[in-house]
Length: 367
Ligand code: IPM
Ligand code: MN
Image (tube, rainbow, N blue to C red; front, side, top):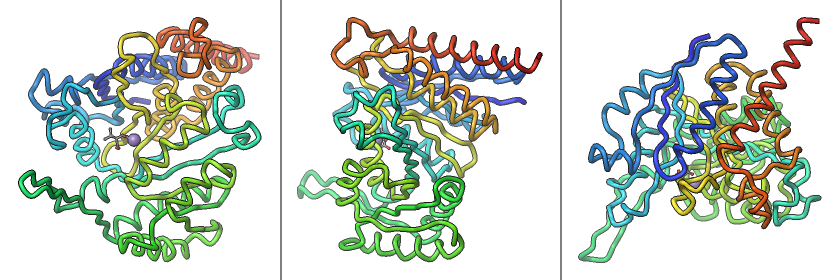
């Protein structure tokens, strides 16, 4: 198969981790006789520096002309004084809008090899496999009006959703839950917010079309607590944009590091893939970044944009294999930073594990 992938590496550790993810995509393509092509484009702080805007038109064109967009990270402290619409992050929010994907899938799966990395006890994290479905194009991030009036000292953001926006993301979540453990937890703040009351009523209505899936509602504050207390109780978690942003970072505690978490955004013109972590400017260029979030994001490219489920699973297995063998980047080294491998070394290790697994399966076929 053919797949055109736009690489928007962005700022900080973005280029380092996307390099490793791209190598893995190339390896998977080569093994399966597929033709993946890559086009690089600027986003975020590097785009502001080079072109004066966090999302140049050229980047939009390249992204819209591709089958999948793989993004590293955006954000650079150099631009902290700029207003939100001029900062590197504005480029990310705008590309999300341009590509149109509204369902951001953020899996949080506890990995046995890393069970001692979580501050939660192993018996709490054991077997945790949650899929967050974060609505990505609505809510406080995009609602109008928004402003900061420096004269009056008043600032406004608006949480707004239409029923149609809730229905479409709820359907994605119910479909996914139907293929998993058939439980959907919808998270809102319906005891205070009208938007959440609409959210709850709408999700309840959509649930009638999915009788095989059990629906429960949780308020976001108590959800934040349950997530640390009994994470195994959750299968698919559906929520609005800001709540999903917060809860998905919180779930990094379950896996032991935010650096492990991948994401895929589906439902629009072109799927967008980005690790959950940020640009981590403090460790950029030091080789300390964990590329596994980006590599697991590459697996999601294979699964959701290439339809190559076996290859996606092979990449995930290669990551497990390397962790089982004891290799760790600094963020998951638990104090043993001297024994940690670099970003590039970790990428190579996963690459070798993947190549060995492919060789094994090819020699099986040959027999
Ligand atoms: C994320 C990030 C972004 C968000 C920022 C960088 C705009 O935190 O993808 O979770 O808030 O969505
Ligand atoms: Mn976030």
